[in-house]
Figure 1: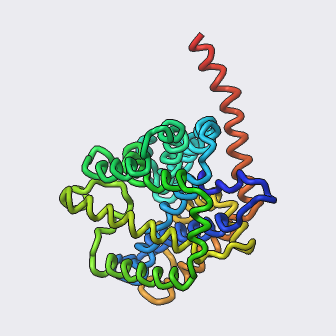
Figure 2: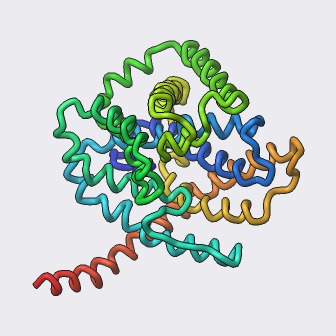
Figure 3: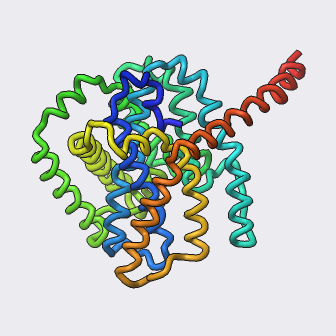
Length: 346
């Protein structure tokens, strides 16, 4: 998965900054999802500010890093199905079964990704097509224009994750186009600058949460402007503003995240298992809730639960079990399905 891209590096060459950033990103994913379903969530609340802030940078950061480590375009295309679309096909019915057991009912539609599984579909698109996209002149500004234009077309949305595929495209392309020396230049900026910038961005999150400066559903970069209650020009302006806010957050992450190996590094190297398996915990919280709803205790419990789930699911034993399980299933798929398709074509 694109969430664990730095595993491509040899250990002696590993840049722990990327792992550490990914650890922050994956914790933010879990925290935002847990707050959303803890029973009394409101956007105009401290929890809402945390949620808004997280959705300004989590997937943008992941896709930026994924794009940065997608420069081997032939390898990306060769492994796109195995790494992303195949796990999606396996996980969709599993998540359906879990929802059914918890709630007594559920639906499944492979063309409408369940919860966070949309990321796998989008990463399949990006990794498979980056070889072609990279040949387009001025692909970065083109990707921005495509994303802004896609918000005008309401047929793009949850179906096949097309809305998000077009919406988040600039961040993946930016990562692909980014050179290490540019990032090194950013890292030379004094940390005080990033701290001030972060405070300003948190102020923007407060404005979005309490002042409705931008509709929260715009942050998902999924639905068209009309579905978000905005006209075309207003929607284009709002999405462009989100691009700027998100890009600044990515810069803050690079500027303030420690670069040395630490407890975050192991988490950041094993984020796939966290990303996939935390969905199950989210379903459980959504079904049964957390104690302390409506009190300050819910904040402590939600943050503690997110931290514990992130840490546990990122343990090498769990990550290795997940990866080996998917590899074994894919091996069976290759042995059973591929020979059948070859005989059909013959």
